[in-house]
Image 1 (spheres, rainbow, N blue to C red):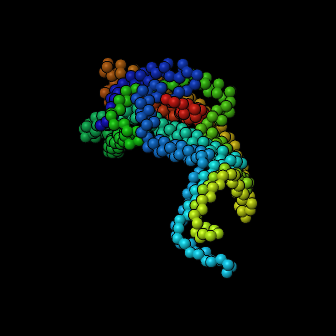
Image 2: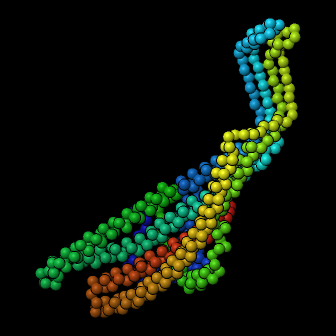
Image 3: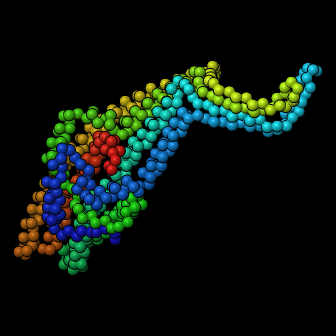
Length: 453
């Protein structure tokens, strides 16, 4: 298999290894950190995701689209050159008997150069919209990247827990196998009833299913890493689940609740993106209103055609023009006023939605803080249970060494100790993911947008 499995016989070693990371955890920090700060292999996975994740590649293409839209909006400042030409037969009929009808074949050409002079801010509004779209694609990338990283972190932490879980399940399988090997003789001696024998077989079957399920989950995660990140080498998984400093976390929770949660809202990527959409709608209003105002362009043209002049029919004529061109949509059936009302209503709706979204974000942050507090307490309780179970295992190992405890009874104590240690690991993963959610909510988008971040 492509992953490394640790066979842990002594839960004491498992629990002690995790406890060693406590001092190196969050104690030296003013606040929580992402788990990759202590998991170098996970950090490399996240860096690969930045380059290879399909959704990020698609987002990069969307950014290219926004760059092209900005260039297209800026193009309105440049002179526009149009060329018209007609080739064919022309017939001119006169109602006066003094003029003779004429028919001719020829070619007419008309070349026009225009450049906007004053469009009431419409061009600037289009450029502003394109710039906002460009910025929003960057902000969308932040949101997509954080979602990808969250999934990678959760899967990696699950891989670490699964390793310990497999060790516990295999010990349980060995314990059940030892009991099953004595089942026949125990039944004959009347030590085990038929119901107990059936239950023992069912438990062993369940253990085999659980092992297969955990191994399948390992394969699923590794396949996802290969598909989504391009990770093709075996994972070392040589670091335990980071153990946060719970005392430091409690102090941080107290400081955070006391300071309030409003400062980060304006820097949240989605808040910024929605605010940009508001500005985009305001620019749309400028563009709409300009449609019913006189638009001034500098224009120059050259026209070649055939004309009938005194003494000569179908004489070639070349006409030059340079000056100011004015176009004015005086009445458009109330279309512009309707579009103005529509954009204004949309702007008011988006303002209300942004206000509600900010309130929802703040409520989510408080809810996540509460969950972090609960998970800290749960982890503290699980660690106390694991410590008590480990101390009981030490006593059982001494009894087994002196012959006062059977090998089967010792395995049962080991299973119990490993289960409590697994509960510690699961509680740590839950806490780390809750911290991840809080950081994703509150870290400024500029952290992800910074070069090299």
